[in-house]
Length: 183
Image (cartoon, rainbow, N blue to C red):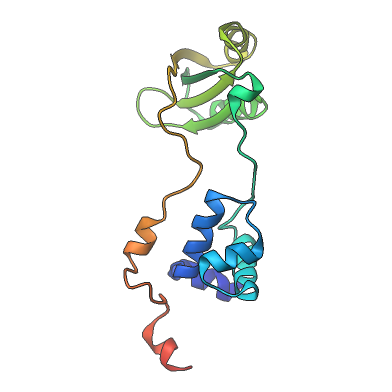
């Protein structure tokens, strides 16, 4: 495990980056197809995939579901300001928000608001109930500011990898030169 952590801290090699890109596009891809697309053997691809999972680079695989298919038509971005920003107030807010299924994302922010939430609900009436029954009942909430998404212009779950390749433009192993000479 220590060798794996060291290799990851030195940078991901081109095979690992390619596997990540392919899985972000389609996590249902079979091992043989993944290996072919990555330009590797099935066994080396499987080993690398297991390393990426055990090291935490790949945290989990999920299905991305169309919210409209589940009648979740309203996407709201909510800025929340707390009365106090001490550790107890932050933890209390975070604990309550973590239990709410309609809160898709929650970020502790710098700037005017303390938190930014992305909330997905069926309609405005359901959002109103969420605000009245849940957000306003959290102790220490001073201000809420809601912005309603009119259209989703872009949505992706795939993280960019271009910066990883840019630091290794030739596609060569990122291991130090002296290690390659020892082979």
